[in-house]
Image (tube, rainbow, N blue to C red; front, side, top):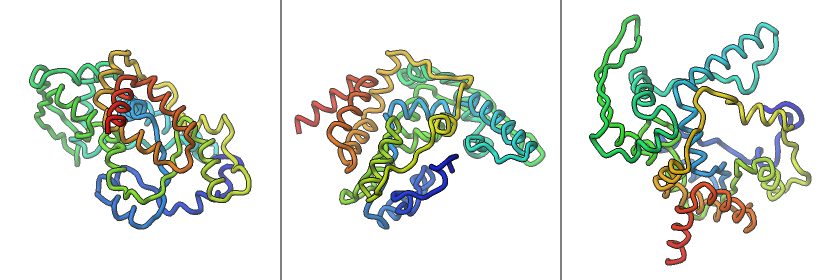
Amino acid sequence: KFPGPAGRSETTASRRISFYLHTPHAEQGKLPDYYSRVTSIVAVARDPLERFFSAFLTRHPKNMDETRSRNKRARMIAELRGEPEPLWAKKVWPNGKPDANEEQRVAFRACYPNVEEFAHCVEIPRGERVYNGTIQWWWRDAWKYKNISLDCGELCRDVVLGRSEFVHHARWGYQAFLNPLPQDREVFVIRTNYLWNDWIHVNNLLGSTYDVPVPSKKDAERVINARGRLPVRNNVSEKGKRILCRCLKEEIRMYINLLNRAVNLSDEDVRVTLEDLQRNCPEVVETLMLENEAR
């Protein structure tokens, strides 16, 4: 799919990949069946805190609306010029059924309009801040209405702990994907911060006789970093980070276990990645290391 040599040929690794697993497979409980068909998996991994930021900002209604509008314009311009649609200009789908989508929009507006407010919302006691209101949506040629009540503190805790669909990718994290994975499966890890280096190395381990081509810097930025400047960006403070890191402790534990399990990562690779993680969540990483030593 990439422009240039990287998009014109299969690699040793890509030829061996039988299927792609994402949130719908976890949601539908299909992961054990898929894992039973393979002896190895390739997992794309990211610092859990950074992953949460991305999940939150991607599904923020203001960002979704802006991305939807921008991508639609890009597709229309390409069509008028008789050119292929840009790779990054994909359609942006709503969060679910119309009523659920409107309820999630209200939650962002009333409970957590940005990342920093979300972090502090996590600490609001149950029942202290409750939003009561009515949502409306257009469905089958008529307006529909529904009364809703949102306990902001409880909702924020459910979101960050993966118990709510309101931020979909936060619901399906490392625990959802790795708990069903049998221990005898071989695991290759592609770290997003070292994506192309890891992809080259995995291909070499699988028998490639040359370093596979990767997208040029310009192409890679357009495809991987396609969101660009959006209305709502990460404004989290150091205090906000500490709050979220504590909530993500189990996700961080699973992430560290995944790194240690990766057959393609050297001890030095793991050390460097853990240093990156520790800069974001020093207290949690130190606690997990102490717990591991105590076992």
